[in-house]
Length: 381
Image (cartoon, rainbow, N blue to C red; front, side, top):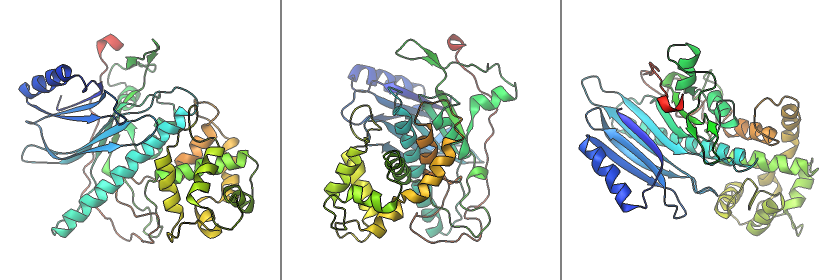
């Protein structure tokens, strides 16, 4: 293989780490280790064969969440006369410990797409400043997603233009892949199909569809706002005034940083057996709400991000049309996905607070990739 992506790589064991790195180096590969956060002993190992690809850049993406999960991003350029670039993401999402794990895994997907957007936007700016013309890059994202092809994360990625390599080949009956394919045995002894290779081609990356609409980039913060709104609706807070009062404990018409965090905790979004928001994530949300930076979120700032009256209609609509295979949080998950990235936008778009109208293609020539083959290990068939 030109690129190998491993999860649960035991980097904390010096002997194991040296064994992999030395053997892969001897076989002509560069190796990149991405440790999990929180002092966890495992992480990701991504290996690139030097004869096939140059590594333009490697970046680690820390989700900074309750699962201490991470992703690795590599910008690769093929070796040869007709060089092309591709972005490769290696990741391992949270294991489904409980119903809230779906929301945490969705949040991890949102963060990956947001990071991809930021990276491509920076790359485009660099190319433009050098007098060149930027183009969209194909994205190959692989790893253990801890969810089936019919789960919430897979549904969201498909809505954003990603295609599953295994499902693509299974559908055309080109390779011997059954409809109930299995990719590994989890630590509960269950045979599961949760390891995926996803492809997002340049032609599926749309910053704008008709040249007139403003499109916001992927945003994990927008997804969490949707989750907070849903929890307020479940508490019967259906007016913006009541929702604001829930956060404004002392009723002084301004929500402080401490009030904001306590209210989020009261909604059941922190701690064990919850969606597991960390204090750092909550503080990032508060800074995003407090647009003027005066240390208080007033009513107009609050409803810009947490407008429960507009969310209620969407919440009821999704309640009437659930159709994914994961527990009682399906409604919230669908709304999170819709809020995080309502259109295909892993390419260059705009900042959510900017007002930019795209009137011509931002990218140059599209270079789509084709899934020509997909295989599972014989031991897993």
